[in-house]
Picture 1: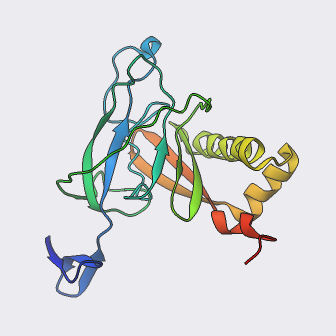
Picture 2: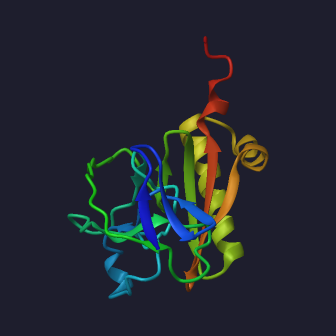
Length: 195
């Protein structure tokens, strides 16, 4: 696959003479050390430490929140992708070398169980489990917890809003552990704000 820059804002990869893939670079793996009780683990599957999330929404300008489990966190980043579909069904994305500029802020006011993120347009929760249904349940529960703690909704209202406004997508299926992410648009919280 060759990558051809068309201009500063649009780059594509040529899959074939008649197929162009828009490029949206992101790091497939960003994480911290897991809890010590987990022992030594593979870098392949993601977990509560984040890791190999393969989440194509985690592009430049996104904030990733990861629970810290050990002193110093021991952050790692890698697995550069130029493009990928949700699900990453074939074990690989459009792999590439990436250089990134990362900023780290310790948020002692946040008590997270699972990774979360904030894109320029949406709030995101994630669920990770060997079972896709369980991964989805985790993403739903995390979205409810986010809406209760950050948007001050009741649990019932948060559950209903998750159903009518959040999009749930399969993040990945290839690492043994499945990933689901939920995204709720920031714009829906602007109703009633002076324009």
